[in-house]
Image (cartoon, rainbow, N blue to C red; front, side):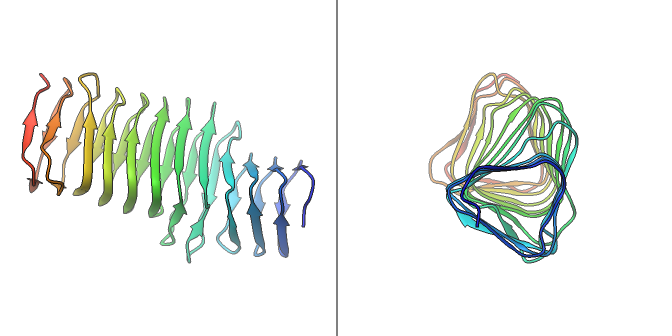
Length: 238
């Protein structure tokens, strides 16, 4: 059990059980191993690659950050990896790739704030709260995504290859948001005149009772079976 802030300057291979109490942990190298990492009420900074394919991660009220300066990769456990309170990809440079997995990347909240690098997620994503894509880098999701809210607020493009289910969809970013398969929105939709292009290439199912209004002056694409329970209004000029 760790009781003081600690920085691991090289790779950390964990084959045991590491518990952090109320301290911050920074790993400058890569993290891997078949052991368990348990954390609560702290921040963990991963500067290198992160491999939970053999090990487990658990805890509560923690913040997990991927904030290295070079490219980083994440491997998810086949039985899911739950990052808890918040996972933040907060990078000034370098791409991030969540590698191919059938296990879910799970979190209460997930923020992607990448400057120059792109984020590629090849595992299913399940976020109980808000998944926000901000910053200037692009983000691509290749498997099913289930969310409380998706918020597109930056200048990078967001692209979803598979089904998306979300209570709320907020498109305030000035770049393109694309859904290749059907997206289901059960609560609210919000955009603005300055929002970027919006592409529903595989259909859309807006099940809430109020009218859906598309305000963006950029292009709006509706393909496939599109249902708006409360009706649809196009007020933008795109």
